[in-house]
Image (cartoon, rainbow, N blue to C red; front, side, top):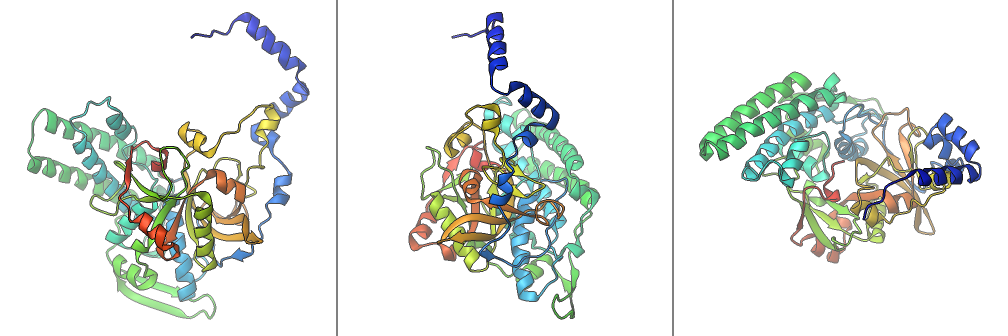
Length: 446
């Protein structure tokens, strides 16, 4: 069935537009101020004040700047919150995000080569190969991917590997590295399909490629140090401390001290293809070959929220992933469904269920942050305190308010310590994961 727009249709649309209430005023308002400003609901400010019945003590907000490292910042922030309480560290203490960034880029390049080799027999226009070549690597990631990095490389304070131009502005290295990886994919596929090279020859070529990648990343971010000194003054009594000649692994064990296996991913994906109380993984998603794999436990929203609340009640912040752009006012630090009245402004129906939004590409997880508080009224959450990683010039010195209904609609993932799970949920998490396709919305990177 074909439908072509004709002149009579245009004339009818024009007539209807001119007879639509307030069309002239609204046309001037929207063209002058933009869609967001014209549809902003002023009452959303009063409805989302930054006051919470549970409010964890946290430090200064970090700034990922022009990079896609939110998942790293959020994860490292949860760790530094704990460190600040245990060791009385100053509010501006941070763990090095640049250190993780270096190793993530390096490991992702090897992970890409692994997938190129696995799919070498497939045609270049197959969906898997097309998906792989569309973006060989990017800045984004998942909680499990950071755990894989830390398990292998440890962590270090920001002073040991500070930010550089490129860690804060990653577009340049992303463009060049992806160019290099696609170039290398051509070579690897030819070796397999045309030269019929053996595994030893492929490994030798791959090692040469990785050597080049290491050099590129060292030029870009600086080469990570193997040992460093940890120096700081305590926040309350201004006492000076120095711990010398530490490795990143030693630092993690001594100052963070977490068992990363205790922290697991809980997702909220109400689509028909994903049963609740079942675990899922994503094909071809990861960063460290042989490292920790992606694994999510899918739960209903009420259980999802309750786990986050229990963790907050115990003084632990919560890493979470969401679709941050939707109905979010960055300058004011508000994420709420009543922030913008797009439907009222345009007199159209925009309502979609969470499942429909996922299935039809309207929404997906694109940003990770940290929940540091919640406002409970009669035991029920009404709004949540959010630590972002966009610096202190937005929101409330970098902190945002997330309404509870916004969480229902656009929050997809939280990371929870297994000790807060019931025995039934622990058994659910132990299930073998269903493997989702690489392009599944639960495989998007924060």
